Length: 337
Length: 116
Image (cartoon, rainbow over all chains, first blue to last red; front, side, top):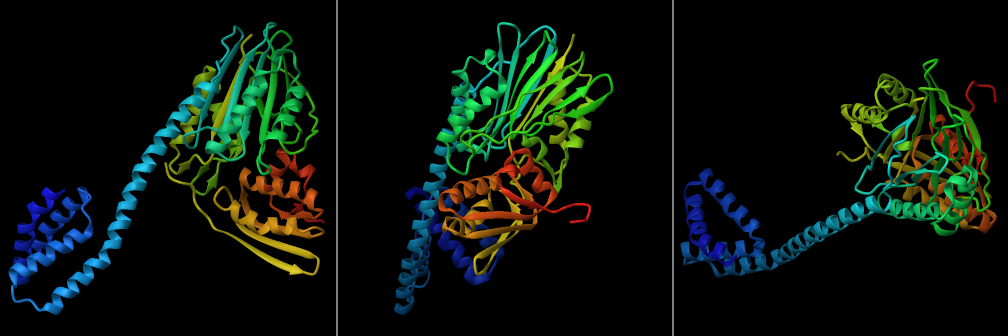
């Protein structure tokens, strides 16, 4: 730091002399280089003023005393800018520390909430989950029961970021404690609702859909707690059916009850679950409607399930003014036999 | 990634004897919801208040907005106040419906098709 100041003391004086005599813009350009070098070394603005005072005294030894005093006055005034600058620098460092910490937390979340996509004969599953920020407030989880039943949970905590992510861990551990494969979807939600209602802030809630796919009976049983409706793609007709469900979000009513719905699934049908990050996507000022999403799914409907969901996300990502305002999760399950 | 479009929200309170009407216009999302909450909650906390929230000029609301009304609902039960939402627009009404909140919050949607 001191070195930079000393190195530039004479240079500054020469530039100043040149500029006073010629007003040559070249001197201003060289001055800019000195300023930048000072900023880079975190040298405070008052040092620059000091340099100016010395230079003026050397160039004009007969300077008015009043002028000298005025410069001291100016020097005092800039001290506070220097302090503010130091604070910015401190905040920048602090921010880097926080960013690093959040990224550690995000990784930890991935490990904690991680789930394995079941690989079973007869079903093909694809899943994509993209957080809007570093941490994901969407949650999905798969289980496989001894009789081959596949349990699928998809949930969305209000809001995003760290509070949402922390809340998700609670859901995960609560579910882990249930004998999942034998517990019907509505009972899972009723139990979770009690846990959530007791443990979260009054303005928070969780939407969740819980489903069992029973391959032997070719049936889907599910219950929904205020979650974005899922869809069934019927291979026979090429039509999408909205899975109409009723049920209040988790965390609002202490004794909420949930209905269980049962749907027949035929060969090559697709079961589609999503979070509202998908239906709340925007392309500029325009909302992406669910119909558009379904059309995109239809376009890739012949692909293996994982390629299908990857392609759907890439389609939206490529839209010119696409913004991911919320976490985005899409799960697709195809009955192959 | 670009940040979302930040739109302003304006909240106007008309107090007319017992009935307090909150006229909200703009978009209710994570950025603007705190403003709505700040205007709404003091009215809800006052026992016996009748509050009407007019959402005619709200075309977009995300789940953070729902959170404000969930919070208001819980508080109103404790304080003995009551609130209704009126002129709720189609897209906004849809999320009250999906979440099941339309069954427990007093909502008057805009009736489409004309005959009221």
